[in-house]
Image 1 (spheres, rainbow, N blue to C red):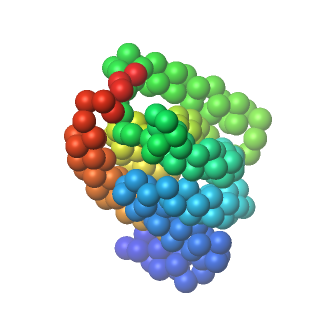
Image 2 (spheres, rainbow, N blue to C red; image 1 turned 180 degrees about the vertical axis):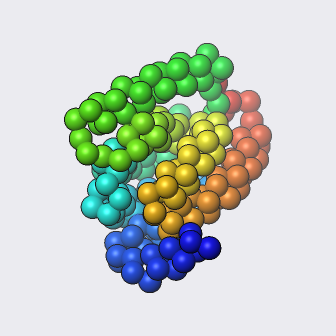
Image 3 (cartoon, one colour; image 1 turned 60 degrees about the vertical axis):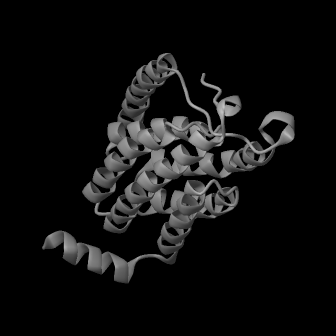
Length: 208
C-alpha cells in the first residue's frame, strides 16, 4: 500500500522535532484524561515542537499559529485546574447549556470560513478552510478543557477526526496516526470525566 510505504519512509526519515511533538502530545492527552494538571507542562513542550513541524514541514500556517497559542494558554490552564475552583480549590467538572453549544457551533463555523478565506487569498498555505476549521474549534475546545467542561471530549472527537484527514492528505502520516491514537484517548477521557462528574455531587454541577 502506498500509504504504508509512505508511513514507513516518514518514520525513518522523520525530523526529531516531530517525534518529540508526537510522544509528548500523547503524554499530554493521557494526563488530561486523568485530570492531572501536569498535562499542561507536556502540552507546552509538544506544541512548541508541533508549531515548527506544521509550519516548516507541512505548510500548515494556521495550525502552526494554533500551536503557539497553545503554548501561551497552557500556563493559564495550569492555574485554572489547580486554583480555579471555589475557595481556590481544584476546579470541578461542569457542563454547558444547549444555547451555548449553538453559539459555539455557529460562531466557530463562521470564523473558520473567514480565516480560511483570508489565508487562501493572501498566503501560499495549504488546505486553508479545513485547517481554519480545526484551528478555530481547537481554540474553542481548549477553553472548554481549561474550564473543565465535560462536553469538550465530544468536540474533540469531531475535530480530531478531521485532523486525521488533514494530515493524511498532506502526507503527514505520523501525525495522522497520532490523531487516531488521540481519538481512542478522547473516548477514555470522556468516560473518566463522566464518572468523576457523576460522583462530585450536585454542588459542583454548574451548567452554563
